[in-house]
Image (cartoon, rainbow, N blue to C red; front, side):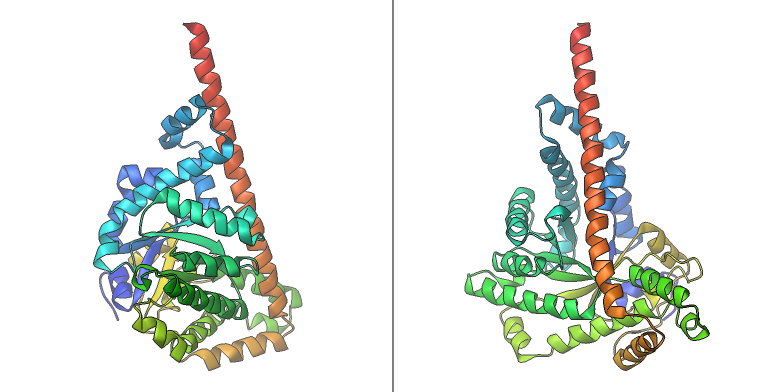
Length: 380
C-alpha cells in the first residue's frame, strides 16, 4: 500500500499509532495536539525515563515545583503530583478519541513505581491509588510483567482498572500475561464491572531484543552467527502475535467477548531502531498486523511519516518462519531463554534507575525553590 501519508495508511491497516513520550511542554505548546492531527496519534504512553528527561531543567514545571516546595511536599508526593497533572491533561486531550473509538484508543498510560516491580501487594495498592487520583476513564495503569506483577494485573482488572502490561520480552511470559488478563476479566465480570469499559494492551518490547541477541551473535563471531544478525526481534514479535491469535480464538475468550470485553491488543514497544545499520522504520513496517498498537518515539514516527512503507500484513501466518529463525539462532549458539531473561531484569533495573533520577531531579528543584523563597523572604 503506497500513499502520500504513510501513517494514515498504517492506521488503515489496523495499527493504532501511539506516541512513546509525554511531557508538559508537549501539552502546553500544542505539540501533542498537532501530532494527533498530523501524525494520526491516538494514544500516548509514559515511563520513568521519559518523565525524568522531561522534568530535568524544564521551565514548564517550575510554577508547580514552587507551589509544592512552599507547602513542604515530600519528594515522592511531588513526583506523583507532577506526573498526575500531565497525565490528567493528556487524558482530557484524548477524551474525544476515547469516545469516538468506544474506549479502545484515546488512552494515556501511567506507570506504577518501578521499585515495586517485585512486590505484588504494593503494586496492586498503588495501581488502585493512581486510578483513583487521576480519575479519568481513558487512563491505563502500567504494570510490569514480572512474576510478581502477573497477579497484580489480574487484581487490577478485576477491580475495573484498565491495564497496560509493560516490559514483556518472551513469548512464554506473554502467554502468562494473556492468562492473567483473562483471569482479570472473568473476575471483573463476577464483581459486576462492565467489561466494555475495560481495555488492556500487552507491551512487547522489540528493538532491545535485537540489541541483546546481536551482541551475543557478534561475540560468537562465526559466519553462521553473523548471517543471523537482526532476525531475533521481529521473529519474537511475530511469535507473540501467533500466541495472541491462539488465545483470542478460544471458547474462553468468546464467552468474555459476548459480555462486551475488548481483546488485549499486542503493543509493539521500543520500536526506535538502535542499530544504524538497520532501516529506521523496520520495527514499524515489519510488524504491521490488524489489531495492534505501535508506540513510537517521535523520531521513529517522523521517519515513518517521511519514508515509511505499509506493505500489508507482515505478521499473520509467519509463525513457522519465525520459529525457524529461533531454531537457527539456537543452533548458532545463542541461549535465547537467557537473553530474554536478562532483558526483563535489565528492563526493570533501567526503569528503576530512571525513577531514582527523577526523584533526585525533583528533590533538587524543590530545594532550589525553597531556598529561593527563603531568600526572598529574608530580603523583605
